[in-house]
Amino acid sequence: MRYTTPKDWLEAKEKRLLLFGMSGLGKTHIANKLRGDGGWFHYSVDYRIGTRYMGEHIADNFKREAMKVPLLRELLLSDSVYIASNITFDNLAPLSTYLGKPGNPALGGLAFDEYMRRQDQHRIAEIAALLDTRHFIERAQSLYGYSNFVCDSGGSICEVVDPEDPADPVLTALSEDHLMLWIEGSEAHTESLIKRFDRAPKPMYYQPAFLREMWTQYLNTQGLAEAEVDPDRFVRWTYAQALAHRQPRYAGMARHWGVSVTADRIAEVRDAQDMIALAAEALETRAASA
Image 1: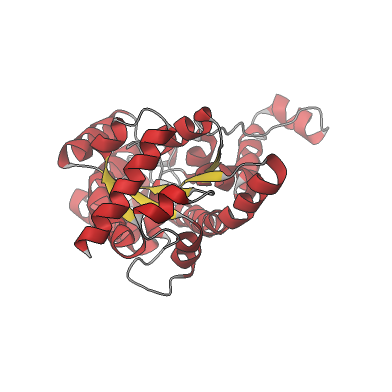
Image 2: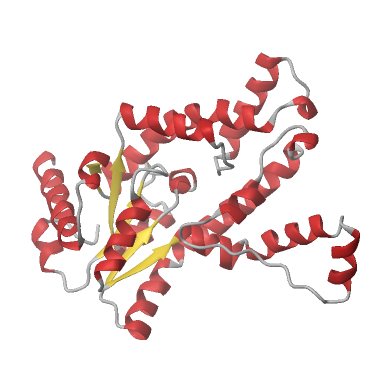
């Protein structure tokens, strides 16, 4: 860990924080607050994935769909139009749309093998984007003069690392450069996230073994063939189980590589000073329980 005591953290001239946990518990909200207060560079892992590493895949998928429309096909072939995604920190829809959902193509579903191929592309991209944090820490300092850095990681960070491996290369690099802070949700938060997901199910990245198990279970319990699956129903069915699957992995990351705070405490943060104090408190709690 880069910071092991509250004193280390509070007296550090360069504060580097990595936020991790389930999407919807406040990572981007806090990162935006830190950036808005000034003095903090905001690095979004999902934005980096969608622009640097998956941008070409995303744009090609748009073009593939556009080629099905005669007018757009003619314009594309003559280089008369330009098609690209417009990903922002707060709008990652092009990335999730590309990942897609498996099932009935008439309902927008992908063949399961194609779905898994895109999942693997995301895995490779996420690892690369996480390891890019060191480059952006240096870039933020040398180019823009930022001393403080916040890494807003994606909810799937726990799927691409092994928290129980003391030599995990991604977690080793991240913990050397940041204070890694888990935003831990309660059962009430979990229920709220599930309800929100039910209203607007979106594609996500999961470990391949977990996904294959969920897919097999779903086909067997529902008595469906692959092409009969309603994509939204499948991802809704998978999501609640995914939360349970991720929870111990997040906990392992906090236990071995960082600290944790509750989502309720995060919701009370008003500004950068509040967040700095909360992180110091988390370090104190860790030291007291050691």
